[in-house]
Length: 127
Image (cartoon, rainbow, N blue to C red; front, side, top):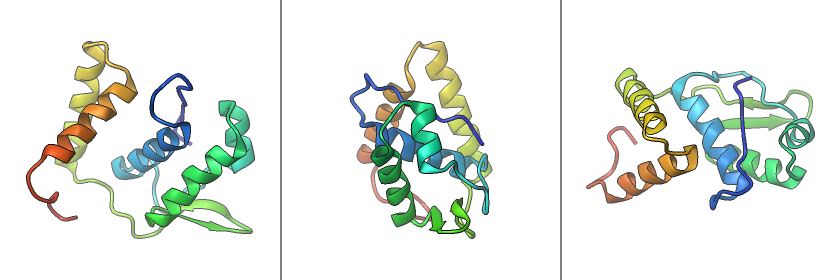
């Protein structure tokens, strides 16, 4: 499983940090269809957050169609969830590298991307 982290001092709620990270890992292909996510209890313990925090992140991912939860198999990446195309992946890697070089935190970088998306004219292609 790809590493997940939570910054408890960030303005962004912990459940949203988790949701965004998992969604990002799915979009980049780091998590693929059928990959299992940690159990709610295990991930909450690893990150030092309440189980309700992880449960909310997983519910939101499920509502978005990115994961499915089944009693016997746990939470897995849903089938048919397309990864971002190569150009978007390259741009994301480039942005991440630039943000690190400039000393921006993950949350600050994500906030900048959200602001850019909100200010972007028209819908994103293919969405």
